[in-house]
Amino acid sequence: MVFIFDFIENMTSYKKDIEKLMWVDYQLPQRNKNNYTSFIKGYLSGKDDKGFEERVSLYLNKVHQINIEYNTWIEQLDHYSYKQNKSMSLVEGLGTLLQEMEDYSGKLDEEKALFDEEEICWDGELKGEMKEQIQLQDNTLITVGDYIQFTDKIGDSYKQTKFYDSSLRAPCWDLFYPSERDFNHVYFYFDVGEKDERFVTFSRVRCLFSNSIIQIKSISSHKGKVILYSDLFAIELEKAFQEREIKLLSEGNGEIELTDFSSLSEQFDNYIQGISEYPSLRETINRWCVYFLRYLDKPWYKYHQSINGSWHKNNEIS
Image 1 (cartoon, rainbow, N blue to C red):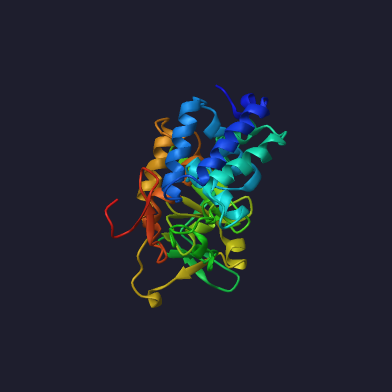
Image 2 (image 1 turned 120 degrees about the horizontal axis):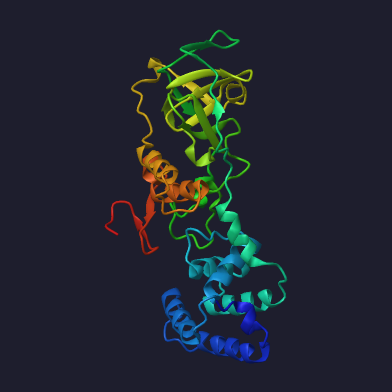
């Protein structure tokens, strides 16, 4: 594979290419994103450099934290250009970016490996003593079959996502990645072994799952901790309550509707069976968060992304 550094070595000829791109910036009959995109794609296709897009994309993700998984590299470039100067065109942005990359000495191929990392213990742990009910220090009773709701860790940050405003050129994607705002004592989990005797936990639950409602399927006392289990989540009860990460719902809350995680459960099952299309559980969750966001029933979910990467209002056919 030919990478961008291979032809950056001859910067004299490459600078001439950039000069041509800049010249085109003022010659296109309509200076808009679609025309810039078409030209850049055609221009680079003619150069037959298959590694170019990957290198640009990895660089923008690693150095500028511009999402690589849910944007095309052109969208990443548009985001970068907008951050540099709101009036900067894609062609100008590409020229600026290449000049910046010329002085970069890091190894971008190492960045690609990060997406395969996952927090998981495949050996599993014993669930410990199973209980039907547990009483907290404030005398609150938690019983198998009760409903738990995750608290809100998102706030107004959804307004900076394309799912709320698809016109954003420089959207924020951190809701869909692990971050400091994630739940500290709520984990993804699944059973392994026979008779639910063992379990595996992996990765703190993302803040995107805020306000989700789950039902307690089992309770255990394990290593001095009380753990609640739903179909896909394990909760360290006392600490989760202390930090107000969860709340117990009662009949006084009105009709309780569980959040639909059946499709995520199916994705986990596929991964465990070795038939997942994604290389890691982390990637599986990342993809689910975007393509199945509708199941989280967010009131701010106004736009969705189609398979070809374009954005549409939820009531429009994509």
